[in-house]
Structures are given as structure tokens and as C-alpha cells.
Image (cartoon, rainbow, N blue to C red; front, side, top):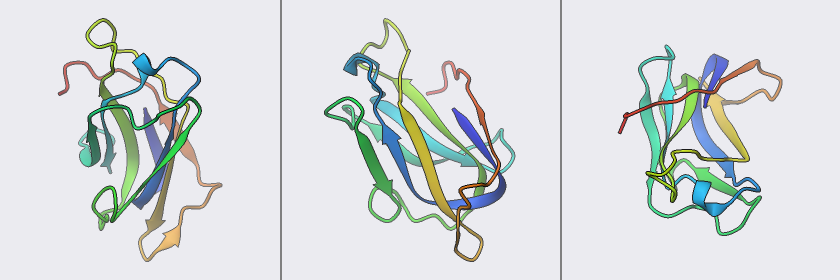
Length: 128
């Protein structure tokens, strides 16, 4: 899923919520990536292991400086890419309840919650 903002933000933290579905659809290999043109993406955070959740409808916080490197570059596009789930290879389907991105613009201005946001759902095949 790709989110597009009107201006570039340096990611300071993000949250990821599990959905009400089965753990077999929880992402186990996934990334959060940033881009300024919507086509060439840079990996900001990557996870390769078991699910980050231990229950349904749980929110997990990931912070720059703790869970991933502090960002000096702002991006207009952020996307979450799932490469693997416990049900892989029988199905690459995954379910996430919610993703929230938080960041600073240029000199440290917090993300305006009323900022225009465009989301795009799609499939990335054979992109490991």
C-alpha cells in the first residue's frame, strides 16, 4: 500500500495494527519504503522474522533511532510491502488493520493531520 503526501516528510515513527483475521495472514517479511517520485523507493525499515503481533487488533509502534535509523531525507511517498506471510507459498495474501505514518517536514514541523493523503493498493510480484 502506498501513501502520497503533498510535501516530503522525514519518517519519525509509524504504527502497524493487526487486523481481526488469522495470524497466518500476518506479514513476516516486509518493509516500509520511501520515495519522492513514486517509482524509485528506498527501504527505511525492514522486518524478517515472526509476526510483530501476539494478538488481534494490536497496535505496534516503530520509532526512528530505536527500531530504524533516524531519517535525514524526507519523502512524499511511503509504502508498506509484504513479501511473506506464514501461509506462504500457498497464498501471499496478508491483512493489516491500519498503518499510520508520522514525520517532520523540513525544519521539524509535525505532519499536519489534515494534509492531503492519497493511498494506492497494488501487488508487487517477484520483488524480493
